[in-house]
Length: 295
Image (tube, rainbow, N blue to C red; front, side, top):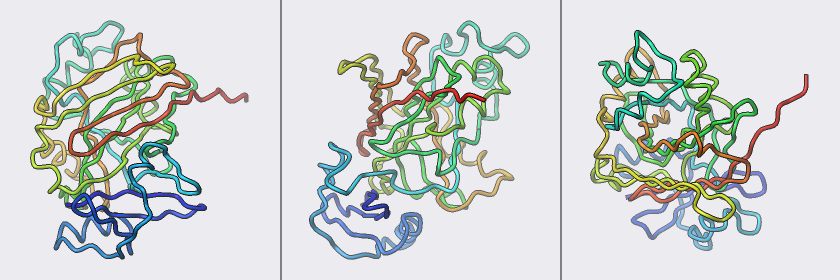
């Protein structure tokens, strides 16, 4: 069993593996190669280290000149939506774009083909303790807590992580053609704090996901779901992702959410988002609101 995490020290990235929840190894190769090597023969290249207080880094984000960050740089991040069993009201809310009398969400919910969309590149992603963002032109942006999978180029699952598919919901609901702007911008994606290997996750359809939004030191919103409510299974989502679409090793696919705060729960500057998934951990990120640039 292995968990991967990464830190920044004096501008340099250093990757580590926690083996069997105890031994910490400094990796000799990048995390993607380590995940692929581990998937093939359980081999990990690196030397055992001491003095890395992983739990303190999780709590404080930074100790002296060492700061925790995203566990890897994924070459591509993709998303899947409308993948959970949910109340019909979620997909028929007012002021949502419609196709032939159905909301765009209802249409996808009943369709054979799942919703698959491009989400992010490495420079648009942040890690544990780093800030996610609200677009300067959005007034209703929500966190979307999701289980994500790290894939090789054949679609094999190399690991699992926590992801926040931050979305400008007002743009998304206004017009389906605005989905890329709703989903893809600087600070739109957070993941971590670790990537865990599949042997850490005995059953991906039995994990508890919890979202908390903290505002002014108090719980502003809290919700939870279990992945047993996932109606479009991960294997189906992967199959559609890689259909006629070559992906590089280390691609991340985030598998959808069932926790959607209402219009009155949009993120604001200074909020703190906490996402927990059993057997993985808790991802904590502050929120910033981007300012409009003057032309």
